[in-house]
Image (cartoon, rainbow, N blue to C red; front, top):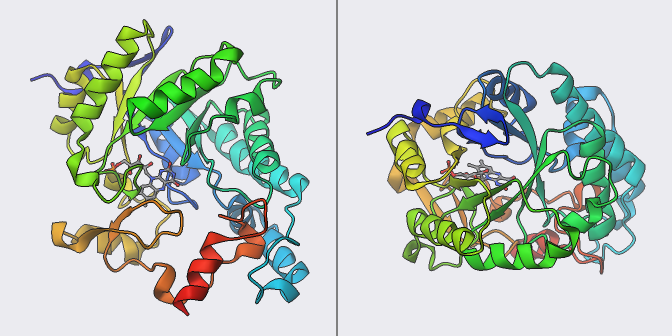
Length: 342
Ligand SMILES: Cc1cc2nc3c(=O)[nH]c(=O)nc-3n(C[C@H](O)[C@H](O)[C@H](O)COP(=O)(O)O)c2cc1C
């Protein structure tokens, strides 16, 4: 059997170690982790989830407390239509987060940002456009579009000078979702540079229903590779979800993927942003400690350690400051779920 090091991820003439560390939101996949991966020649992800709080922690800003102060009177209400996100602040927070990573980058690898469509902030199009353009302005090597179908996301970037130079990729869990994405973006004449195929054993949210166990990554990867071949498309495919050892990775690389994306394996690294106590929980965990549940207000099943705090743990979602699932009509699925629980 071949080893991982017998393979390379190729973007044109550029060759990389075929290992991508997946984005893990709210600074679990930190700049430090991404920098180390890039130094070693692979691809590391940072995430733009709740970037205001990341900025406050790192750059001494106070976006979160200011925002909460401004909307204090609204905290008890379920109608969040009054809450607005200051695009200049969002731009500043995203820009400093990305710049911090890109200026420190050494080595032959790359740093991408994970950008979730579900992060809606009461103005889905405007906030997404700002997040994408600020990351491109700050010199990010690539953007991975995740947590959503992203049928309109590329069009939000089409006028950006780096639209054709930065790497752009999408996470899908089926050839159907990929076909929809490609069809919707055909007008732009800008194919994705890579496709991450995420299977049902991935950590965090799953792009499947509670029938997730009926699917398996190798089959979905084979279907996506066959679809691309039939369409005469030569786009690197990256397999993700449940890949844990070098042998797991080598088996997928031999199947024809260009790289593997891994995340859970790296939650226990020194560079990972989880508190040390939580890292120990990951170390201690064995299979019976993991569950797939439906507590996430996103509507997607979630794979997590049983003891992780969820919506019922009494921590009120800070919708005013983050607007994670705050839709354009002022409804926040997190607040509604929290209110149901309490
Ligand atoms: C703690 C944790 C947080 C994650 N957060 C995100 C996220 O914010 N956005 C996203 O697209 N994927 C997220 N993922 C999924 C990973 O990027 C990755 O694709 C997946 O976990 C790969 O499977 P593995 O963990 O079995 O290696 C997360 C995974 C974990 C374990």
